[in-house]
Image (cartoon, rainbow, N blue to C red; front, side, top):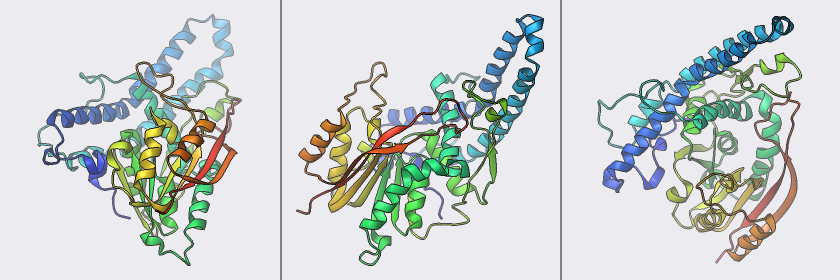
Length: 385
């Protein structure tokens, strides 16, 4: 498989060079955002160790009788630091060529620009960005480890089976069937669809996901090339200290060693801005995506616009509505019944409608706290004019 195109770390088809109308201040803002994310990755070990030291400091304030009861726990904190060191080394590999990818993108970035900060020399890193680095580790568990197979089977298998059933190979030349996966994350779904023989393009907004997916898709040349500890930051609901130290090797399959027979591609940017060509895609597959919108109707409208007549939209996931409780962010949160009315009013024909698909998301299988979604599973068709 060819490397993820450098332009994928830009803003997709509608963004890029100043010749394409992108204002210089927008490019500067994007550059700063990119460096801030690189800094969050680089700062992972420092911020994680600071948290461990805080816990160790509190331990030292306890009565000696209590400290003596917590000798195993003190040893556990030292073991956690070793695991964090391993994670940090993998993160170092993940971001190794990310800066080159960005500077090779269609941005006309001039040489001599400041290099990404590690968070200690002027670049302000938000606490949320530290959390997103931890989330990225959990996403690797979900998408590219043997341990994440159950979650993938819950979420991706129904989508892949639905699409392969609709586009019967005896009736379609699969290499010419164009599938779009918005919110592609670390790219496992686009890989699975491309393995069936389809042309599949993933779209992703998060640079955390894009940088990590580039590493897995293009730099992991063998199975189980790397090992991480995705649960080291989960200090609650552990039955055993060992569960927090559970290692996960990835990838379970190397996309470079076993490239798909179809075509796969990844494009960065805001779905609403990047995809505007009418009647272009044969299929759109969304998984845990449509509730990421401030206005879900805009997502459905764009999906309808860019689908070919007769094309299908396959959706699986909950209605978490990510912006519903974010300060200073507007958000609408229609119920599923309302959403179905909206979908019908926009002209879709609903082919399948299920509301009891049990799914989990980046969940620690050993945790005392287990949660799941009764996700909606929806297959819609754009009518043939």
